[in-house]
Length: 383
Image (cartoon, rainbow, N blue to C red; front, side, top):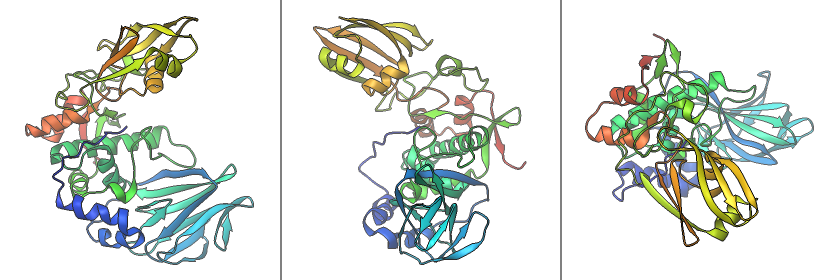
């Protein structure tokens, strides 16, 4: 899940001055930003930042305690002195320490460095195969500070950002309880949620997360699968038409994403380009939809070429041609194939550009959420 940004030229003060600190000042810059934030509640997520790497640079903004998996203290990692973690023996090696797992716990309000950026929380280093995996163990609310900034545009109205915060919180909890593994709950990609650590935090995203702290969407008392996407192209989908089983809260509804830069798009290919990208049927002559969703998304399509034909799913074609969505049509004019599409993403649940448009009309985030998550309730955790 991700929203490609089209940031307006008039950046707010925090975007002009805080973000460049991270990009330009490196290790020391993080100390300035920590002072701006307030503590959050303690529900911890395990987010895989780097997986199976030969080595990973790690560190801490304050002196950090290094422990093994059993909690035995091994030593102290000096502040602002990065070190390389790598596979060693049957475990992980970091400087003079070696164990099957190593945990770096910053002191005070410290944050950790993993790979190429800062993260809140602590770092767990584990051996996976022949490499090292770095897992960020981070408070849910602090995780969301980054996710909302990574998934939405931070200059949007607060009601849109609040809707994104609730959706992202709900999605993270659902994924961490339903699909986590023994090592981690989530990763940092669009396969789960975009998480860039403190690099994608803004004053506006902190405000949105703090204003909705602990709020999730539920159905019959259970946290829902709060799917979201950039824009649906005018109407979202029933989940069973895109994925598998029906869900009472992921129903197709009218979208308000007409102002989205991705509402409509076109991509052109020559016959040779298309044949090379898809492959397996010779020179492509036609692309014929075989099955579509009620809203027109391609479920399956027949590709006809000079050496035969084959059936592909809409998702396969989208990946091969790098399309924004599976809501598209194909026209062949004189050997040039024009793909005309709408929207960006899978078209399920919350539409981010739709939420933006509604927030511009002063629709509160609770109503935005109830529109895109039909039959679901806004619920406070712990109540």
